[in-house]
Structure formats: C-alpha cells, structure tokens
Length: 276
Ligand SMILES: CC(C)=CCC/C(C)=C/CC/C(C)=C/CC/C(C)=C/COC[C@H](O)COP(=O)(O)O
Ligand SMILES: CC(C)=CCC/C(C)=C/CC/C(C)=C/CC/C(C)=C/COP(=O)(O)OP(=O)(O)O
Ligand SMILES: [Mg+2]
Image (tube, rainbow, N blue to C red; front, top):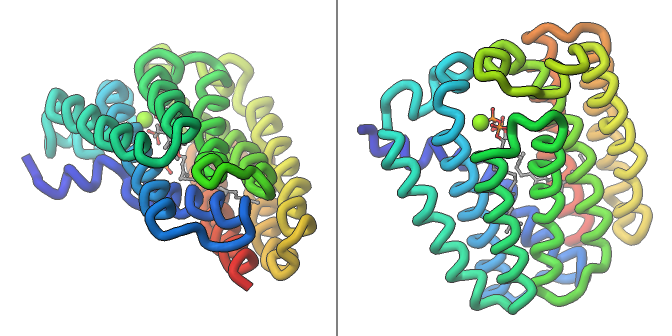
C-alpha cells in the first residue's frame, strides 16, 4: 500500500480545478467574491465530491483500467480495491456534512451530484453517450453549485453551459481513445456502436458549440475575458482538426488533452475577467 495513492487516486488536478470552478460560479453569480466561509465550503464540497467520484470510478473501472490505464493506483497494486471503496465513501460523507452547512438547495444538489457520480461509476458508464452526458452534466453542475450557495444564478448559467458542452466533447474523444479497453469489458460507448469517425463528428460538434457559447459569459458582462477566449477557442478548434483528421489512440489522446488545456485556460480567463 502506497500512502501517496490516497492522493493520486482522487486525481487532485481535476478536484482542485473543479473546486475553483465552484467558487468561480459564486463569483460570477453575484459579481464579487463571496464571503470566505461560503467560498471555503463550496470549494470543499466540490473538491471532496470530485475526489470521491474519481476514487469510486477507479474502484468500478478496475478491469478496464488494467488494460487502458495500468499505471493507476488500483491496477498497479498501490491500493486495495476495498480500501478505495471505503475511502470514496468517507470522502463523499464528509462532503455531504459540509454541504449541510451551506444551505438547503446546496445540500440537495450535493446529494444529487454525489448520487449521480456513484450511479455513473456503478451502472451508467457503459451506456452509449448517456455516461458522457452524466459526467458533462456533473461538470456543468459545478459552477451552478457555487451559484446556489450564494442563492443567485446570474452568469453562472453561461459558465455551466460551456462546462457541459466542452466536457461532452472531451468525454466522447476520451471514449475514442479508450476503445480497446472498453471493448474488452463489453462497454457500449459511442465509438464502439457508431464507429470512431461518426463519434469524432459528435465530439467535434460539441467542441464547436463550446466555441460559440464561450463568448456568452464574457459578452454578457466580463469584457476582458473576450480576448482571453481567443487562444482558448483556437486550442479547441485545433483539437477538432486533430480528431477529425485521425481517430487513432494517439490522435484522440492529443485532442482530449488539448480540450483539457482549453478548460484550464478558460477557467483562468473567467477568473481574471471576473476579478477586474
Ligand atoms: C469555453 C470553455 C472551455 C469553458 C470552460 C468552462 C468550465 C468552467 C469548465 C470547467 C469544468 C470542470 C468543473 C472541470 C473539473 C475537472 C474535470 C475535467 C472534470 C471531468 O472529469 C472527467 C474526466 O473523464 C476525467 O478524466 P481525466 O481528466 O483524464 O482524469
Ligand atoms: C456539483 C458537485 C457538488 C460536485 C461535482 C463534482 C465534479 C466536478 C464532478 C465532475 C465529473 C467527475 C470528475 C466525475 C467523477 C467520475 C469520473 C472520473 C468520470 C470519468 O471517468 P471515466 O469515464 O471512467 O474516465 P477515466 O478514464 O478518466 O476514468
Ligand atoms: Mg474510469
């Protein structure tokens, strides 16, 4: 058992980014930084949810990850599967307790989001496209979570739309990358039932919709972000070019990583735009 596996299995880079997006949702909803206590609780509920979701995801994906991701903590033997199960339950339980101290709506959305993550990992992931929509829906719920915490939606709705669209695109492209392991486990993902080319067109469509939607939050009120969106959108368009040109594992990996970079840069742009 490796102690670092307890951090690694949560995919901290995703969790911290998600937590920041939760607080960003509060900021764009009310137009200023929320009180520190609310911001801290929002960050923790989203981060713990993402950590618990990633951990339970690896627990159920053990067989698939032995093929697709053998370097991950469970397939490489750095942590026991039962330990991962109990660890994920602990993370989610702490998140729910903290959500209770925000407000009723925020507590209820945490219950729904955590349940969706468990259901996704347990049963929904193999369903064609449904699994992608659930994961993207959860990422879209993240800025909305911060907005609920401050009891106002405001521009967070635009942020949620962008988060949803870009993550649908990225999940479909990730499925193109993971076809080999998914076939071995009998998962029926979009590239498996429709073919990689058609799935690439679906992913590209959602990526292009993200570009169109990316100007909504900045046009609606945070001007500086307008210019910061240009490199974000150029990266998304380059990912579209790569995945439409070739759907092999390497091209899909490059395209999905570029989409992740666009997410990170976009979040930074929204933070800067919301702060000035
Ligand atoms: C215009 C534009 C790109 C706007 C971005 C909108 C926005 C606020 C996006 C943030 C979405 C979000 C809450 C991301 C959290 C981290 C994340 C990528 C979660 C989804 O993870 C599922 C994925 O399958 C994990 O795979 P991997 O990243 O390879 O571990
Ligand atoms: C709104 C609240 C309270 C929490 C949201 C928490 C967040 C940000 C969730 C984002 C989506 C997410 C990280 C879900 C966890 C499950 C997960 C990692 C799905 C993707 O896993 P796979 O589809 O198996 O792909 P991998 O190959 O990366 O494992
Ligand atoms: Mg997985």
